[in-house]
Length: 329
Image (cartoon, rainbow, N blue to C red; front, side, top):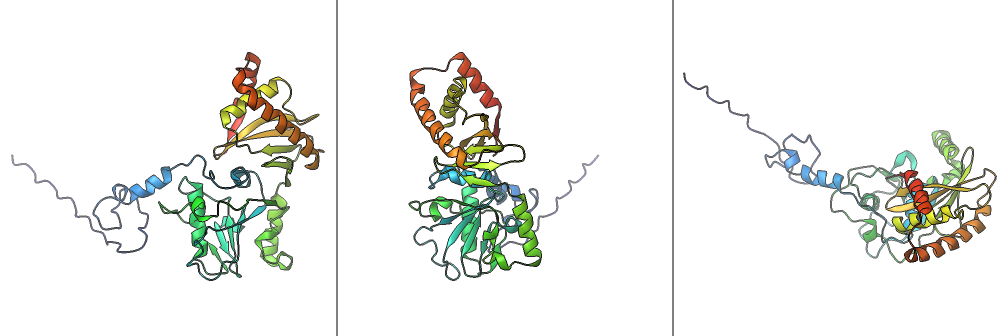
């Protein structure tokens, strides 16, 4: 009996994309570039790599790395003036009088080009590449190419784009200004009416009162419903910091005064953020002196870690701290 002739598979047909960005299609669909290969085996490889790329410390090398982390994860409303590196603003659409980092922008816009040409860059946005610095750099470059008076729409970050470390002046200071609300969204917040005013009012109502501590770097007081907290982003390597905190806890020297307690820590963008519970009546100003005293105890303890291993009690304290550690990203 004669064998049946094998069915010929239909020829793949695609219209090549001759210029511009290759659009995203299904993984098994023909690549829009016209190569004849499936998207996942062609330009989809770059997209997959971009999604899988994970930078542990995206803000490393930037001035104020710990404050970048705090503003990204802990602080509701804050702004910081940014200085562009030499030549970055060349070729921008119109004049760029200033660039300001903002914790969050309306509708979670990645960036906003104001009518006067100034730029607001949103920090608390979705990361599409796994490298938050590259995502923010992409939003900043899009803002430079955007007409004044226009928000920047979210998009997938192209692989190989410039990171913040390449776009910003790394010698400039990074000094956050913490706000009680989001009036910085508008050039003239007092004249806001209608939906704009209502949106601003809702945003302000949801913001947790937060203040920056001045006696130590990168520490932020916040007022919660039943108790207050101090959240302190530290640049000490995590293992050393946990050893030191465990030693201080075992010696009953980890608190910030009466009715305060070190309750655990966050892990965020490669840095560790110890957290203290505070009485609801304890203000930010009242944290200044205890925080400075704790900083001295911590420095002393860190310096002595090499001289003696943790005791059994200190190891138990460390295990307890690790069990209560929360990873934010």
